[in-house]
Image (cartoon, rainbow, N blue to C red; front, side, top):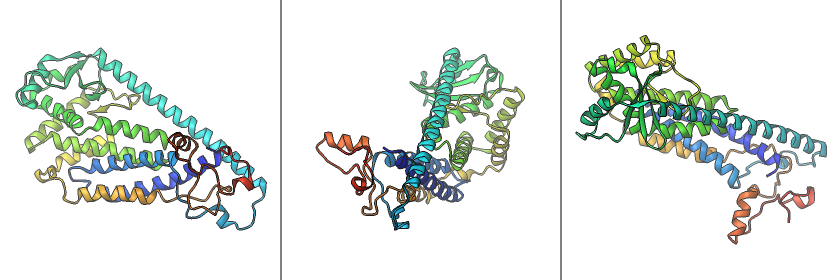
Length: 358
């Protein structure tokens, strides 16, 4: 794949992501105080990942091309300048993505080491089995305690684990139960998987500020959702708020270098919003809105429509075809399967030697 083709993909993906994030934020406003607004952001992140994979693996529509906007032949210097810009931006994008992946992997390694250094707490495990495991003495989720001043968090790699600071053992049982319910909700709702997907999106779209903003919104909605799942009455809200306050008083740490974990505490601004929402607790917020499924379907439909937005930034794009060439790697796979597809520009044999020409 040429640098101009990658430039066309990156610029168009940036516009597609902008539209999709904007639509998702608008739809999330209608479910913000409801039960499953976090699902909307999870669907949006999944759609962003599929859009990125499809753009690098499949041909895309070209409703407007550079040649259509510039009927006369462009000077070769413009083509060369576009190639240089495409190569430079591609290199920067690859370096940024590599850095994000390294940071994410380093965080996963640190979280794994932290889980390994913690010890299984039999008392809390038995309590969880009795109260959250339908009376089972052996609970499928390991509960561990750490000597380090960490915030409670859940982790799911080979098996689901909840790690608590050892100081939590001194909390009243009602507050311990509130913390455990919050972490159980993260695991039950598959938030670790959603967070891993979110990290992949951040690596691919690291250059897009709206994608990072969407990640913060998704983080907040996950915490709001688990806060709601952790309480069932106003008395439990009081216990939960006291557990939050007690954790803050202990000055437990939040290691931002661990991007793969889900922590009980969050940044100060989000923590205050969580407390405010819990303070306005209503028993009706536990019910999902009937239009929630329609909202998620709407996001998928919008993602499909957004995938047709491609900017005419490639000077070598042919005006005689409404589809771009197949990417090199997918064209070769299809060739092995006996399917020959066009992996070159229609006018490439006249304008320039294509890198995939045979």
